[in-house]
Each structure stands twice: as C-alpha cells, then as structure tokens.
Length: 236
Image 1 (cartoon, rainbow, N blue to C red):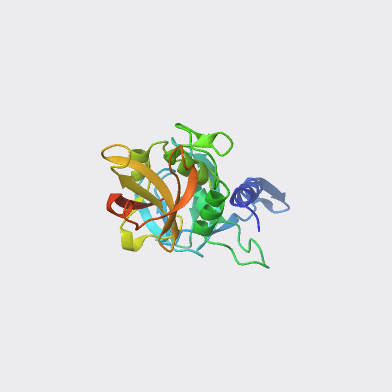
Image 2: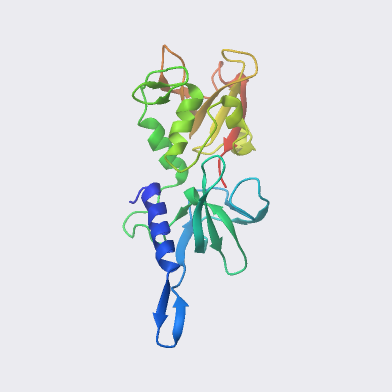
C-alpha cells in the first residue's frame, strides 16, 4: 500500500499534469482533472471556503467521496496542506492528509487513518523521555510525541498540551475513536498538562516521564481516568 505521503505526491503530480494545456487540431483544451477520494476521517472531511481551518465549512464529505482535484496543494499558516477540490455539486478546499488516489491498492483494503496513526505511534514504543523532545532517537515530551506522530500524515500540531487541546474537534469519553488525541489535567502541574493518542479498547500511548518514556497505559485506571479532559479529533 502507498504511504499517505506517496499518495499525496501522486495526487499532486497528476494535478500538475492535468493543468497543462494540450494543443489539439480544433484548438486547445485542458486535460481532465485529477481524482481523489476522501479516506480515513471516521466522521467525514470538512470542505471549506479556503485553504485553512479559519475558513467556514461548506459541506461535510463522508469517506469514499470521489473528488476532482482542481489546484494545490497550498500550505496554511501552521503547515497543513490543502487542495482545491470539486464534487458534482460544489467546490472548496479540503485537507490533503485525508485524500488518497482512487483505487490506491486493488489487492489490499485501505487501512483507516486511525490505524496508521497507531502503527506510527507504536514504532516509537520505548523511546526515551526528554523535555522539549520531538524525536524517537533523542526522546520526546508528551506533546512532542503527539506532534511527531501526526507529522507523518501531513498534520502540523502545536508543541504544547494546551495547543493540542484546541487543534481539532473536541469529543467526549464515549465518542473516542482510534487515533484521537487524549488530553489530561493536573498531572505534573495544575491545569492542562499531558497528551497522548487513543488506541482503542481503553488504551492510549504517550510519552510518560523520564523514568518510563513512551509506553501504553490504561485510560480508565485510577490515575488517568479522573484526570481525563477530552478527546481531540484532528480532521479538516
């Protein structure tokens, strides 16, 4: 299966080719637009007026929606990539991380984005803890670990626990899905103070502290459950 980065590169390559005018006997025309499919969002992808979360939402596109790609990608102020796309009814801007080429792999079903997020997070199990760290080689702090994982999917998150609380749509405990960020309070300091990534089945993965590094914990145990604040679903 292509990686999300290779899939985006494939879309962008076709976009560039599709926007080059082709001379024909009767005159000139443009090649057909590239195609892309919404994938890995769980709850749908917001189609927006412009390339960034500050723009209003035009429509919610469910997984599997096929789109014509008109232009892009365009990078917003925090580093996320956006693509100008069109449905039969409307056009707008969608976050490129949640788009894949049609029929990405005819032999293997496409994994959900949540599963890919967790696979990436698991690859750093046992990495050391380091204040301010954003690398499995030199270590992570809690928000640096979350930032690092999501960066593999074209998503630029703040390097702070408070910033990550506001990085997407907030969800409650009973709405948590695999790949959601989980946010906690009153751990090593009062107020918002820790983040991790929900794995499903009541588990989450996080950079804990200097003694433990990156590990998997029970979300609803006697320590973490009373400190849980919210889940955060990072989607366009």
